[in-house]
Image (cartoon, rainbow, N blue to C red; front, side, top):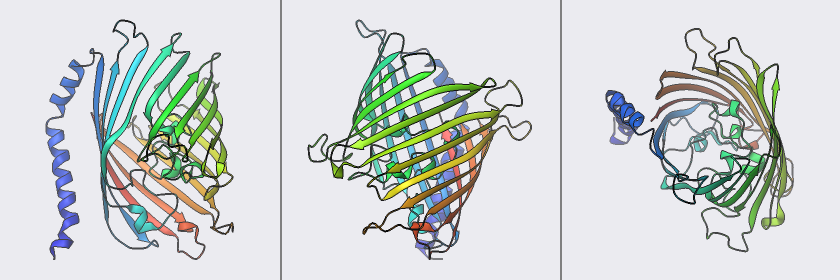
Length: 375
């Protein structure tokens, strides 16, 4: 075996040793975090390590290793004089490893931690709340997908199209203000009456470039959301419109629904939740997309925090000459095993039909296993 052949094994062994070390010191780490919980700040760390590859179809059979480290710091500044309702948030990211989509050749991106290697400040913003949170203003480096185009039931899935729709994520000079590089933003949110929320924001049109350069313009978005209970089960429904002030003035809209549809007991969050999302773009490389899926928390007896999910996402593309491309469809089956409050293992299988929106490309069968630690 050559030195090059040994590298994936060394990466995997190193990651296992890291997780074992964290496990050995977990109790001490949790005690320290609990002792700091009454302070006006909160620190947290999460690390996701994923091994993945295409079993059939795709461009190669390479075994990929990808990691994503997030460090969060939240500060409650409201106890300081004249700073009532003020908070701050700083998040750093470290991305390393291989690209799964380079092996699969898909458009929708099979892994939501697939990104170029980087270590940077990911988010950094200040937020001021008024009238007990009925109105808030936020300014700084902000991830659009942390508040917009987001459904709770889809968070378990690894495919990027279950995070933010490709009709929006595939726009802009350098993409919109989402992973892996958010940009500067100003966001306002108001809750005019109970169960209703209006959020609007203006984002830098070219995250990663010089902030607010006039020729890059900005990306504006407006979302109207309604919280709805059906038979005492929580749901959220939203309608939004977005558009660039430059870059051919690309426009789009989306609808989303997230509803818990069954709960076997009064113990939250056990039960079955569903989501539906659809979006369109008038000039983007992905003209429309939709996604739907189910997420069952506690499907297996005595495993109340495990999550079982199945979802489908489809994207319709437009070629450089305006021709309609084949629709890429991703089907994902996943199971998240919560072994500890701070440690989870998630095996995942995806079927990618027409990868790269190419009707001649063979269906790709993708498998992945993600390990995640959170403190």
